[in-house]
Figure 1 (tube, one colour):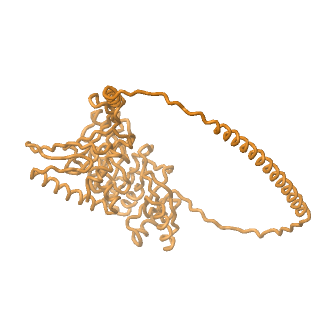
Figure 2: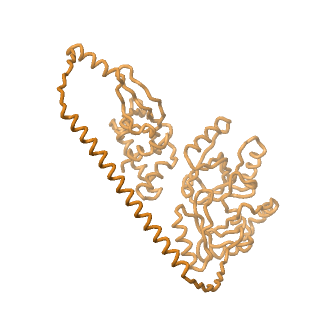
Figure 3: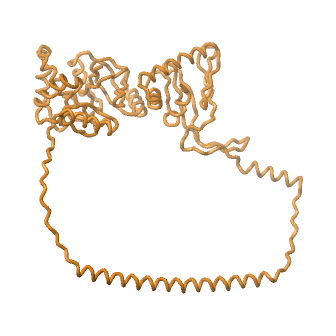
Length: 439
């Protein structure tokens, strides 16, 4: 695996590329400059550096390797860990490692990593194709030095008179004008002939149209019975990033007798496929129980955001007695298993459930914000630190491609609800949401 090639590709698009458990390559833009000694103009570029302190896996490098090599995310992480172990062994033995088009890395006497960039490539895409240019001052000095050694003298040239060229020019102009006149006359004749032919054809066509008789018989009416699914409660089969995969899933479910369809794009940019839609939550709950037993144990219910869930109903579900009633507990988990918007007015009543999270334990998390890019994530973490909110962490959900930022995880629902209530009573400007990680 050419790890430096993947890092080099990412440095064109990102300012920070992290090698888990090793360090991060950072890039910073610098403006154009002129070397006063060599009189060379250098285009804007990115200056590379290495930070040994940033070692936490943000998933960027592994995700890119998984996409390029068509392997699972876990396999990509294992490849990176194996390469990091090999790199550390080389450095410990005193070797200097060269990352092609990036720079050289070695250990100093204190065991710290030293990085020396090579600047073979300019990772600033705005300067693509621009190379160092020598200014006019250098060439000016070279010309002055040559003139001092070899003086340049200019002698006027006497041209011989050639009268026959005049006659040839006059003859050429006469022939050109004659040819132009003949060409114009021929073009006028062709245009007149075409106009006459067009008028004759038009007259014949109008005569035939007047003589024609048309008889149109009325067509029989066709009645189409189209059944449209309605309902605000949807039993979800899965979500797909590629639309063709969602259409294939719908065909498979219809072949099994389900009224499946593509519900549309969710907030994570995935195409959701549903077994069917229902008018009431009781109908949806009965359907999801049957589907979990007979077809898909991971099926869940999504509720349209315009359906308001009363606060007193949520309280009745979360009473301590519910823990003794298995059916009621299933209903609570199912009804609330919908991806909610962080700007929703009823986020305190709904719980977002995410599955298969690698870097987070199964628990309840009070999420302060979620973002789909590393830049937005880091900007939010910096803003929280500036406001004095410490110990903020995040985990990455590979299926949705989202970073979830939180401050603490909780084992019980009532404790995380109390923490959410404390945030709502404070001056915290964003609305929070409870996320349940279920691995």
